[in-house]
Length: 315
Image 1 (cartoon, rainbow, N blue to C red):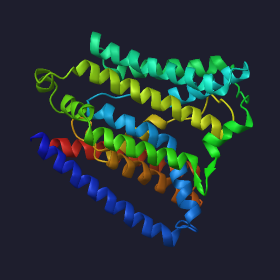
Image 2 (cartoon, rainbow, N blue to C red):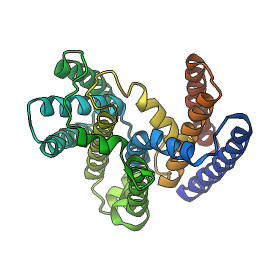
Image 3 (cartoon, rainbow, N blue to C red):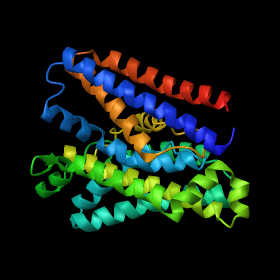
Image 4 (cartoon, helix red, strand yellow):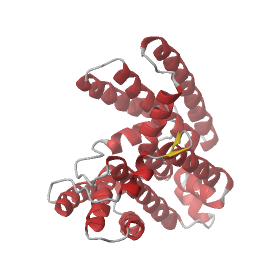
């Protein structure tokens, strides 16, 4: 099947998920108390904002045919590193910049390993997953560090008028990535690299550089999301963001992005991340036991992978 055909099939699946999301929202409006209230819908956006920020970057990574399993660990490590720097009286702005730079360079390392030495990103990021979790524990000695100035809370729990800052970040980043992928040469290079690497190379695209850029970008976004999470809980905690990588990858696939590369949209990812957020929020409002919620999330991940496999088998 051609790339255009695969794109149309993925678009059809994306539309199907949009319809399912609307049906679920209607059902929850009757079954879950206060689901359709303005405050709760904003809470859904805020709850998925940090994972959504990473998911937009993960969309680019998967479109080029790569994967990053370290984003959850990167988020936890970044929050801990920022708290460590703040504890040593570094200005919070400087600490934010240093932590973001560490995240970007870590992702760039993954990209270099992939582009220059052909080490699969799956292997590199799996190693980073373990290393960053250990790094977070080393920085904090295994205990949360609560060293942030009170003003830092604005990034994680503040409001602009009646809209949470995190919701603004989510929607703003969506708009930026939508323009990036639909209106720029870089976006076209990402699709070309994932769709047919050899054809992209012959057309003059530096596919190694594209891979390095998207892997560095998603690590940077994970670092920023980790610092937003630290601002939300006002501490650097090494045990946060566990399982984020699976939820994020599931959201990207639910949104229509193909694991085989070349196909996907940022809008679809937004639908996917909101879909997961709505499910979790609805179960919470209905007092569903936590262990049952984990089972449902596991089934969602399985369903996402199964959808991808079914799509691929029809190509």
